[in-house]
Image 1: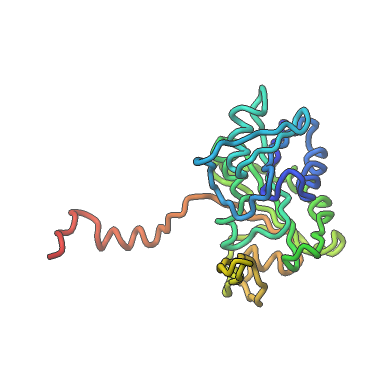
Image 2: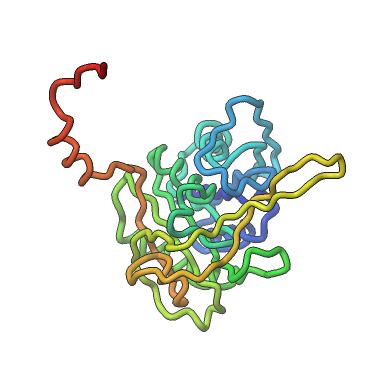
Length: 262
């Protein structure tokens, strides 16, 4: 099995090294194509207005001056020679990618690009208790459980239009309670913030970040599982259509186009 690895934390990230060790337990044919610099929050962005540079790190490893989506596309179309990868693994992200965050996540986007190219794809994230550089993510938890979990998922299979989103709780391996298959949640509080600052020339700028207000998510969600010390497995797809509203609007505005307002 040929495995392609990517991430959004960059080629030098601790989580990518963790992912390489995870992949080594599944295959001896592992390729890495990851961003040269951190691309957290890049979502499915493509680099369209600047040239993309590729640096070969070793025989099967490359860094790319672009987004995770750029990395996977270039890997599959050009950098990985010969056989197309059988599996894309994206991560292991430093920080959880759950709830509404998945729409902004470069980690999830790397997996989505793999899926869009017809490859089974999995995003992996290691939850943290605080988003602070002084806090060390417990990557040993992801490393302890991911290989066997990925093996079970591959054996079970999933639809071609779906990506698997794995989130490992911010606890030591021995404290992980269980694996729960979950649905995507939505927070009842906002965690994103922007701090206004002033530079040395007196001009204002903003620094984006996160805070950690209390949240009380419902049972069965990725949020509740990770908060409760469980590994969350969430099947995701990119069809954002809200079918209930489609059916409602068909009865209200479907048919002949409305006349112009006067």
